[in-house]
Image (cartoon, protein in one colour):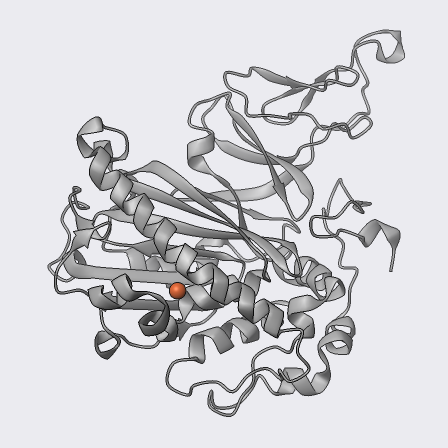
Length: 405
Ligand SMILES: [Fe+2]
């Protein structure tokens, strides 16, 4: 493996050799994927749900596998690197870390959101170390190389004895696009349009005016489990009756359907009989909802560790950051309609939504971590899946591998 290709999740060994054109080199081969997972295990993903198997243990425990996931799935597709609410005004900048890489999400002086590698072109010092506001330019703390907010280089103090360095390039930009409240990036620059990637998801949320929603709060979770287990848990409703008493009372198993798949998107929905605090009660609803949407919960996940869930009164994003094969970070951001996001008048309803998400995820974390420990057992062989309930979690295995082809 070329040293320039070593980009580890949350690790210290990183490197780029093609900063000018392609941020991530295609440095792993499909044969590497087959060699780690095993060709037999990959074949076992196919076939009817009741007889197929999900990914084997190694795909949940191996650092080599996770490195391949980064290089062949995440780097070639779209994933969420930032949140629009972090850079509300021109000149706002927010450093973030994705897969161990320092990135910078900023709003330029024309109001556009841009994403750069958060390193100076000179000696790769970190450019911005904390959230900043009202910036007019970006100056490296190391030698003062200074960039416009569009990434172009303005000054190199004392370079050549003057202030210029005519050959020096600007910041390394990353292809990015905003969808509602979320900043998606495509590291290799060659993924199909984000609009196409999100088309199946767009269909699910079309009836909601998500533009009226404002950020109301975030809940964070540290989970000792592989990122895929967090997503699988999120999309399969089979465990609701045993793990979530309040959620089961809200919509019982008899009124639930298994999650469906639409291309690379996995999704579910239900209709509830009566709203409750945290789910549709005590807060303003999205405008002009259909009668069905007014009593619906609908949610989906993408194979690149991101999901969205919508209720009549809020939208929540579900973001999972792989940190190590057996560790991930999860955050749920809640967005409420208009002033409900910030006004004291709606404080109780707002807190009820955040508490609901906190409670629900605390009920899940022990189970997800238990499955991670189970992935070290030689008795696990990809699982004995429910033909009725488990198509979506199996589909995630398939979509991860599809993305790595
Ligand atoms: Fe759950």
